[in-house]
Length: 136
Image (cartoon, rainbow, N blue to C red; front, side, top):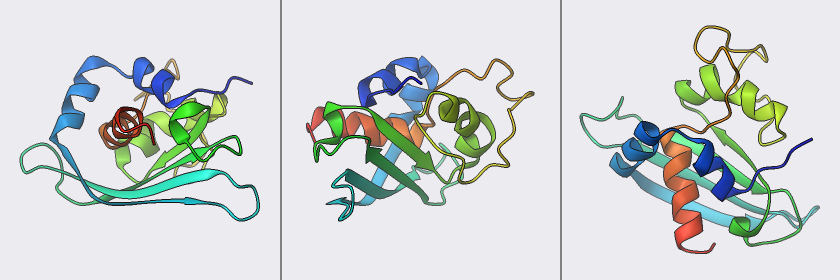
């Protein structure tokens, strides 16, 4: 099974979605290490600026798949509470071990993502870019 890094997830995401990520602000973010597996985890709340989305906050989680505290250094698993992630991306990313079914019904998005193309929503694109740029 494939494992994708933060940089690879950003690379698979289309240009318009990456561009919309610049209109998302990070409300708060917390980085910690799990006690049991020692994985680095970031949980954050993000919100689109007025006119660029619903305006309601969405939660994201990005988890290192290794014991490495630096999330930018290895494969990750990602989640977001937004509808874009739930209805288009979660199933496709699960097939590459870059997510687990948490929010969707676990079925392929045959209408909204018929080829199960792996990419991330603007909230995850913003947080992943921040992780990469700050070498977190």
